[in-house]
Image (cartoon, rainbow, N blue to C red; front, top):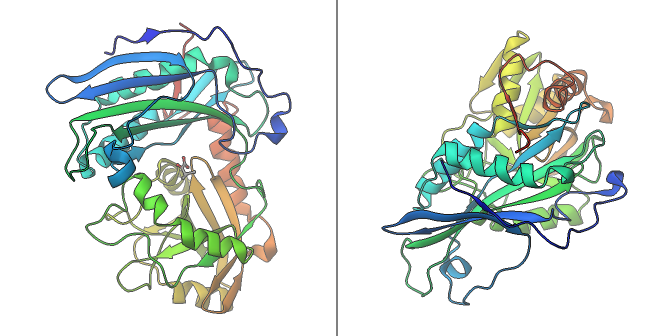
Length: 358
Ligand code: COI
């Protein structure tokens, strides 16, 4: 159990007036959670302080060798004004899997969840009130040793910042166009694909930019060895409904084990769908589209929620999906997941964790 010292701001910022214009990750709440780690001492000085910049030495190792990991979660306001989290234990466990791979110290999952609840409680007035908007929570950790040697640091800072946010894509729930990347790769066996480390995203930015220049929202990554099998999209996992069955890449080390991904798979199985987690060749996806069997394609992610895809472009071939509209199953998944998250549907699966007012 953490002993969290709370220092409240004396200059609270104005809250956003128009929640329909929040966008994603653009403004930040009044406070942040900080905690430091020193080898031999462990985690110490857990605190909530006014949100703001902090000073760092230019030789701090994270600037040079990118020893950094993060998480993405949300807090939701129910119609009754309660604030709640969605499966925060899953984020805590994934955080520790990322930490382990990056050679960083773990945080006991109960401390991680306690810290998230504490910052959300202090900034509970920042949780948006309107449909589809929530408080996006970004826990992250950086190596704070000073020096240019390449080795695991002995000092780290863990922080949590919060951003009232709307839809991740400018398109909202409108279907997006995705470019299947055939030159660059995101992950390969033995690397860090399964972690949420900043380096994975840094390596993906150029391909994303090129795709955006061509009018696509994001890229779909293929496996890093054969560039043959579908893996994931820039900020979400991806699922394909082909001839009534759902296909998605297995989490065998190169794909991010999404919390939304596993929740959607559970819902699909409850509804009697066959879900195949395994290798799916992009050529077979395009073939299914030609044969009229590619019924729906959607992404899943904390930020992206459930995002319909209307077009896939691969090596000059184009697959059009669901007539450019959101598919029936995609819509049902979106409604069910967001219904549970915002407390409009019963939480029969024990996924919701309330943030009590302290
Ligand atoms: C999330 O969905 O929470 C993510 O972290 C994706 C992100 C890179 C925006």
